[in-house]
Length: 210
Image (tube, rainbow, N blue to C red; front, side, top):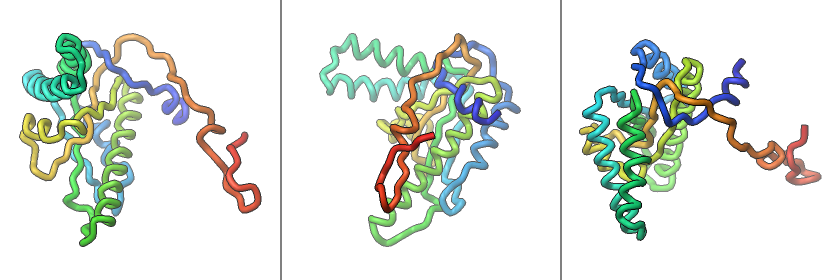
């Protein structure tokens, strides 16, 4: 049932060595293709990485950028090295598949003023996020684990250079993907009464009640 799929999906970061079949990956990518998008512009682009050498090249470039940020933040060198090794190098090189999620403004509407172009860009970001959510749910249905990693936002030019991406491809995220190891407990979630309100002219905003 759909609601159970949504509730049981988790961010999975540890995978076994099994190869993800190409037809399974195609179905996951197909789910992204049918996500809603502003103006139906479909501003998402996906780069699939199977090859270990490419994973390592990307991971090393991003790890260097993160290490430099950590050092500027005052993190001791050895601690910074440990963080980037465990959280960047291992995560990306040990994932059976990486999907680099990119945004393009190529087919989005164009305006002469900054205010509307900013809104148009945010609409593209929201569209790409909808496609990512579709892929996360599809991966879960296929028995795969996945994790949405937003690290490319902190080093977009480095990711573009490492992967030699087209000029209009703007890296937004990386999905790690594979068959999960271990079991994962449900995370804490806020109650509906904490995140939803009913607005009426008489009472104003009141918390949602079942």
